[in-house]
Image 1 (cartoon, rainbow, N blue to C red):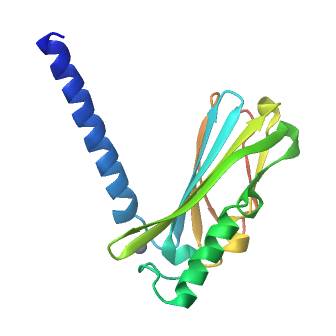
Image 2 (spheres, rainbow, N blue to C red):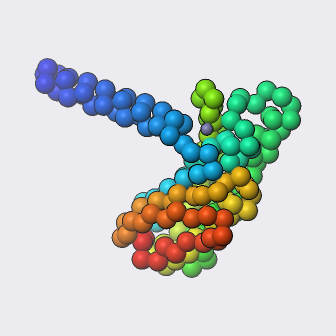
Length: 173
Ligand SMILES: [Zn+2]
């Protein structure tokens, strides 16, 4: 291996380390209570939904749960987050089927965040026009949801509140 190649690899590792570190810190430092985020990303016939939600919005506190009652609240929230139907439902036209999901809590100092993701495989992703947002129905402390849609044909940003039940994603995928 020549020296230049080694340096390039080292720089790459260093930059990816810095990137992942700052990205992780950013999510907990910069979150605003009452505002959750949802990223919707397309990869071919796959659509991925990723939520980041301040603990405040989900269970009403952000300290590490130690009391029985708080632990129960966290477990209950993880259960709700584990079913995509409580969070987002792609309309029937895309013929999307759930493929995998995850739901976790991340504690860091005085703050915590819930993270959940849902991966769907769609038979007719181009026909997917509507995404129903169920998040507010289950988590009443949430006031706003910042949504970024990364479709292969179109990208959009939405900021929605409790009164909004769906977003239109026509021509995005
Ligand atoms: Zn916080």
